[in-house]
Length: 262
Image 1 (spheres, helix red, strand yellow):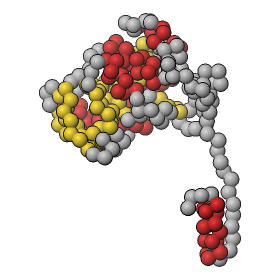
Image 2 (cartoon, helix red, strand yellow):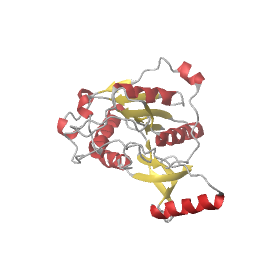
Image 3 (spheres, rainbow, N blue to C red):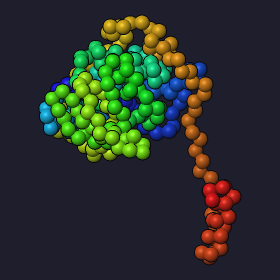
Image 4 (spheres, rainbow, N blue to C red):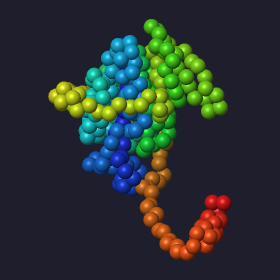
């Protein structure tokens, strides 16, 4: 079985700069980490690999520094990795991002199963995975809670339908997005870090793609235009109250009522 896990490098904190002209995050040189939801996608892939045997590849899109999350994936047991990096990919909305990654997956092969985390912490759209599947012309299921059974030609999963949990059988090749908590993610292994320190991370740019139409990538290929984006302002204002418990509790009640929390 061939599995591809989609991962992303996201800002490590809320202290990020925004390009006022384009409305996109300035990722170069910013503190970064692997998207937390992608850890569950990797763990899902590793559990399948350990259960039935599989080759697991990780793919990411971002600036050259995003290769760090590929190397982190190696430390969790991933076999190969590829980074899609090109200035022409920058500023992509969910549609252009999904198309870029789908074309990158076509470049690296034809996996039986593509696994994505539920969403990313810097976008929160939860749309890229399903849109990728549509571009690839394969079936997909979102919000997967549990892998029930691995068959020769399909996978059986439980999916969260908000008010119900449904059982679904989906044939390969397919794509799933997994919920937080499907498995407990393992920690990166120092032993694997040493064993994979020289392992190659493949880099692909638009020139490596089969479809080189620039109008489908980056800002140019993004029908969604951000009007304004900005980091949240920190609110560290506070008050100190003194008095006996009854007096302070009355002040707290009054304050909560004033702020319309109650």
